[in-house]
Length: 562
Image 1 (spheres, rainbow, N blue to C red):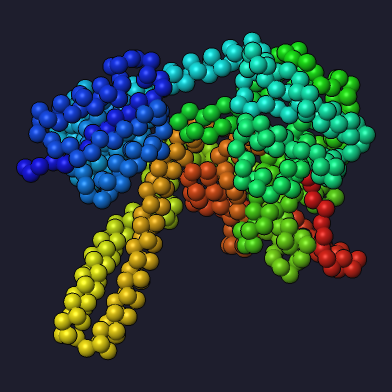
Image 2: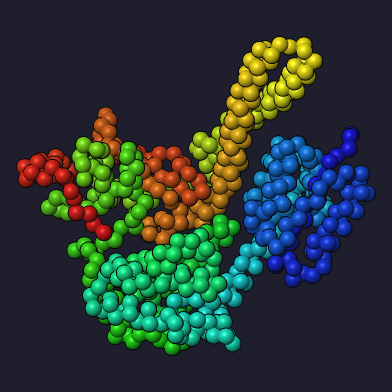
């Protein structure tokens, strides 16, 4: 056996620091260096990620090590134990059982007695699960600590809300900010006078009232240097910011915390139901009275275009036309007031697209069924779910990946050959072995080929990176879906956490009747197949179009439910 080029990998998170020197980077380096020396491994690089969680695999030196493995520079990877590689048992298992063997890289976890050169590594799977339980336990403890501090009325956010500042002697207590409190009071005053959020934002822009982000920037609390390169942005108010201020009980003197929580391992936040949020009253001085607060909110609510049954769709912002890509709007159809989605492009110009009409109930049932199926699959057979996501995502086609690797090697090899030909041509030109005409012709030829090869290499490297990314995303998607096994209801919160967009296609006639297809683009997972279902059909479905033509309303404008 030849000399094995070896990488030593060390990682330390904030949680590990509590264990003292036994887990320190210095201790890990010394231990691994000694082990490599005793076993005849040639250390070519030491990779260190200090302060990174084992659940996070987007670590600078870890990725640098993977790049060196891809480049064929490493034969062996050694860590102190499996937990140094990571604490997510799925991802660690992927590297130890799939990735390293595929790359012919031997992996050794010294303290856990794991060596992929040996077939006796059954204990590794159990240790990986135990390592993840350690992180889960820490997560629970941190969450419990956060909720305990919230119940004590301690204000805990990174930035000051406009109208308040953190007390100099206690950063968990708010005091009135004399510079900005008047802005908040003015917002409630204008809202009580019947002015909507858009109009208030316009008024503030005209009166040149500095925005909340400018106050944070001017006080050095947040870096908005790019935004305020344009001085006019100092007064750029968003109606959404104003709406959030009007709805926020903070300005009544109350603190509401734990409104969001992070999904374990997935790293995305989800909204916490209002009943589980922590509200502590009278924690600081109010800026408005209850009467003013209620009046402003009543005026804002009265300006909304509500439906007669107070219906709010959980699909808001997610449903798109499968043809033109524009949003589908919700409206009522016929005397029975069926809720129905229709392409907004078609609604404004019937020649620009088709209606892509779909009943709300059909859409709801199809999306819920798809989520239930994939959540159950991810819960019962995680590996199969990951494989499905990788297979269905065309960017992660395994055979294409292998083909691209081969093509990349060939392109790089040819690029090196062309570079050597350049050098030889210059030598032949200088020695007179080639005429000037032939020299110029060949230089042009090889230069064109070299440029084409560079473009091909870049394209292939990007494609391979997409495959690598999509495999990581597939693992994240499966973990997220498994959290929702047994889901029975769709809400705006769980839909926005799980789904990026839903594409609706036109109805088609089959022997079995009218069918319709939707495609769901999942967060992390992408498009995992297509769901087809029998679509409901209304009688006289052409009545709406006929009525438009009869009334001369060729613009086809439709009033959509907000």
